[in-house]
Image 1 (tube, rainbow, N blue to C red):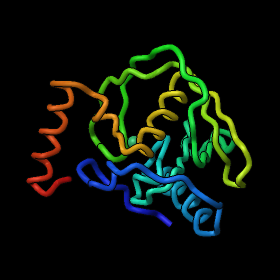
Image 2: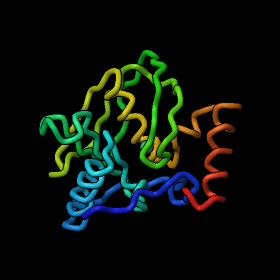
Image 3: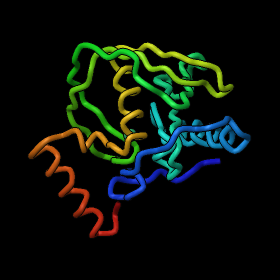
Length: 169
Ligand SMILES: [Zn+2]
């Protein structure tokens, strides 16, 4: 089932998500819905926070459904390694129409559980590392806009406020 994606300004996006205690049938349905919603958007990643569910789950697929082996479902993720630095353009399904250059570590290793509840580790560099960090940020109530400083953040926030007032957000 497709779920509506919350947009910047919704207070639920700023709330840290809590760990998943067990992979229940409800959690499995949630994961299916997240994958479907990510592909429909279309996007390369989605965190449960973005559909208003405060649980530590994200899905990432750089192939957007074209390559089944590219789909990662991660429950209760934690960074075990982070190194290097990359500066690239980044966007978000919760901030449609906006992108900005965000500094992120170049390589990360994330550990958690897969949808079967088994221990699962993902190592990512470049865009995958960026996506993994972007999604963990969501679970901590942080959007890429919150990682920007000064004028680039103000510019986006001001434009969104204007859209909001016009009923276009
Ligand atoms: Zn996002």
